[in-house]
Length: 413
Image (cartoon, rainbow, N blue to C red):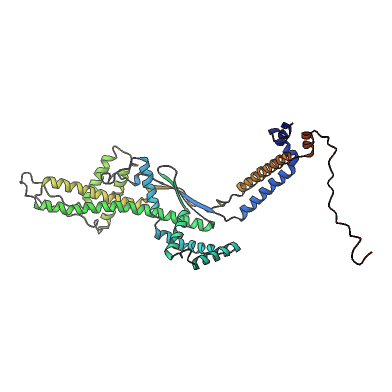
């Protein structure tokens, strides 16, 4: 006898199919209501747009065939990725973030958005003012507020690697036009920084070589004069004509082994063009800071070092001149910043799906709980069966009516 009521109070898998026939209309209505409410929320929530660009930094950005002895080549993939990412992230200095925030009015818009525009915002502002008045919180200084603005702006800039050489750089904001302009500004700053870093590296190496010439010249001057039998003629700076002749000789040798697409041949061609232009102008100044030749009769070993450095120095001049003409050979833009056509968040279709799913499963769970509690309640039929008494019938549910007026009221018989 006790098993039947317990069995009646439980729900089986077969009973769930019956829920649709019993509560089908209510479940459908709740599902549609959830979809409509979530879709409406997608229209009302603050929009977030995103623009991005994809940049590839080639390995030859870090290496030149003319200066391989000075600039070591990267080998490990993790090292290559971290080196390229650091080159991109180094533009995100506090000064540059402040310039972005002030130039495009991002800092000002954040302050206007922070102003309370609703009843909740007013209450929170009043509560914060009360806490400040009673010393519960410390007032924020101008530096702390500026730091919070920088952190918020930095969080909107996303940099992640697609592979070891390619990176996706994006920016998200509530205004699509502002998003595009800021992304274009970041793109231009990244390109300019990459060019400046490479040029700075080459110039530093050239300046370091130039400093070595001073110590070599002192060593050559202090060295005892060699025998006239073994004395070698002192090297002197090459004129444009002599250097042009050497460049052409190197080209004639290299073109017999390599094609014109080889980077060394291309750089030598560029140097040849520059020297020819200098000779045509007949007044073109030599590269500033050209080293002076050592005195005659210097030590042969020091002369060899001096001659090798002189060759490296000329190679660096070729590399610097070549980089000024072919600055875009070291990286490529796979995707340029485009105007965001649709908000990144919220997605109306996704919100509609979420609303339908929430309404359906929520109403289904509520219907299942309602059915369960209805079965677990102590009904007249279950009570009669448990006590072994006959069930005469159910009392009808009568609607409540207004109480009839009393006959014996004051002043009336």
